[in-house]
Amino acid sequence: MLGGCGGGLEESGPPPAGEPLGAHEAALCSGLSVSSLSLSGVSTWQGEMAGSGRWAVAGGANAIRLEYRVDGALRSSDERRPDADPPPDLNPNDGSWYFSATGVTCGVRTFEVKAWPMVIDSAGNRTVCWDSPQAAVRTVTENCGATAVAGGPYHSMALAQDGKVWGWGEGLFGAIGDGTTTSRSSPVQVTGISDVKQIAVGYYHTVALKTDGTVWTWGYNSSGQLGNGTTNSQYTPVRVMALSNVIAIGAGGSFSLAVKSDGTVWSWGDNWCGPLGDGTETYRVSPVQVVGLSGVKAVAGGTNHSVALKTDGTVWAWGRNFMGAVGDGTTANIRLTPVRVVGLSGVSAISATFWRSMAVKSDGTLWAWGDNRFGAIGDGTTIDRYTPVQALSGVKAVAGGFSHTLAVKTDGTVWTWGGNSDGQLGNGTTTGRSLPGQVAGLSGFLSPGNGQTHSLVVKQDGSLWAWGFNNAGNLGDGTTTLRLTPVRTVGFGP
Image (cartoon, rainbow, N blue to C red; front, side, top):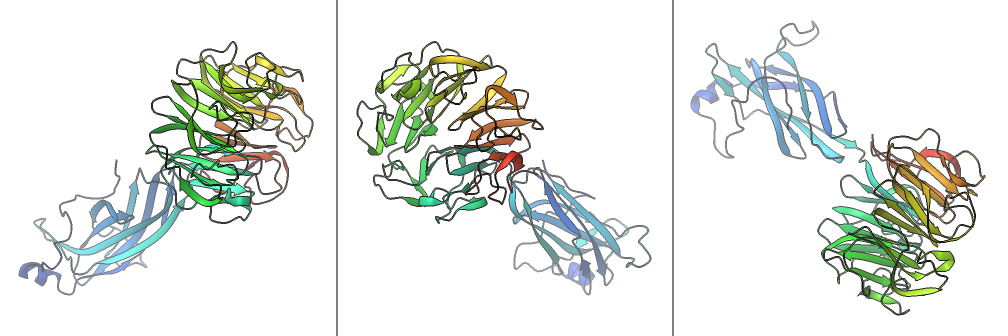
């Protein structure tokens, strides 16, 4: 809904170009002008833009017509009379203007206020002098909030509210997507992509799903993980041409995953130990269909294993079963096609990391299996788990790093456990723990995203917070300083 200020909107706008004022209007407007138009301030805040300023008319004008535009589009207009009691140092034909509008998208916006002198006679008849306008323009920026974040071992990516993608950290092989291989300690916008709704991160590559169902990739491509039919790295996004109608994506170490609207799963890239699920260990430079799997709604990838969530709430996995990452209760080294994870039903979300997998059930319980050398399963032990065990309750979302796990609870609190060599648990120490502990001072959070030894979380207001390893600028706080407690990533949210 648009907001504006002041009187009526009797005038719908200037006359068509080239159409002169009538003789009567021209006579009334002769010598009239807007003698000054100031813009004292314009700001944006969570989708609302507001501005104010002053104006003055001369030559017999006794009112003013004002129009307010955002990025060239008319948002509202009004008519104003001079202030009844103007300050003594101001023109008696001086007045103020105010503007506000909601639904203004974040990013760089251009605001313009345009003014025309008016004559309002004693009968209330109005004449706008369209030939004598003045305008004032201001460019303002509102930081977009983040809606999701994903971390790899060496770089981090965030999805903003406007559908743009931002990256920071190690830029090797073009993983950040800004057209360079430069490392960034503060977020930079990914070149040439918008309308994104999901992101996923591998070791040195990134996958993005657009709202139109197309998939785009960039970064390292030694095993075909970009899915563009080559093994050439890409410094900016390229489309995976063989895919359309995609509803979800995932990324493993050097491979990628996608779910189509028909519930089938497709994969490409490195296939050592079978994470592509096509029954072979042959790497693929273009998508191939995962064998025997349908009805899927979400996927996730570890170093060389994959996990899928079906619409019926069951979880399936394949690839390398190192330390039980596949979760089928066996010590079989490889599963070249999907097998069902033992004992899980009613699952609403999944996540996978190096050699560990996690699932959140609809009742809020968190279950994990696989590598537990550092206590990252969260059951109080360091025993590898070949079937899921419960770690926490009241959970909304989970993500995992190499040796630690991060969960956001439904109450917005953040919990961590596992290895802590680089402060990735965010508790001010480098001491690990095998049971979940709350990260002090954090509340109101929506979703997590872990790197190898750093942690990332998105707050409800769109701000993004991080801690842990920061040698390549992985935290996005403008430094390369290791952080034992959360710091704010630059440039997201209010």
